[in-house]
Image 1 (tube, rainbow, N blue to C red):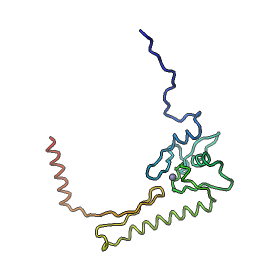
Image 2: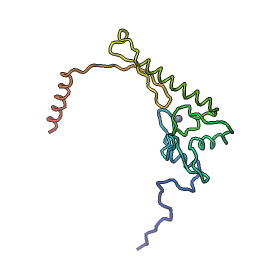
Image 3: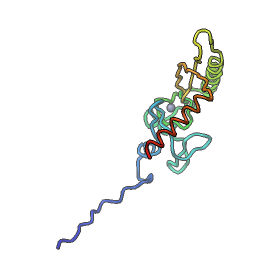
Length: 172
Ligand SMILES: [Zn+2]
């Protein structure tokens, strides 16, 4: 009878190991969002920003991710999230700018959101009866469309409930 050979491969780790490279650690803690292409940080957060311990101190994950791709951040410059998602670590969603640029960006995003709310509220029922304009912002991406709003009467609710009852009874 042969002895069962135990492979000397270490067990699969389900946590971030200190020996991993910075790129591996950032990839481990970031999950790409298919709709917005944001890399959502799943690790620790400080003020909404992704944070990890690197070279003996806690650093912002998005700054590390950007530096990995583009080199060090010049003095006096900040990174602006073009997607307005603080926990996003996608370097393509980050742009170098001054603090004033960043503040102007934040103000513009707020104005866009307020504008979208106004546009959604102002619909013309004569042009599209039962329709309403809709603008949705998901992580800085704007989606426009129309939704049909239908009033559901009590009889419709009763019909639906009856249809549920009939499917239940036909199954048993
Ligand atoms: Zn993003």
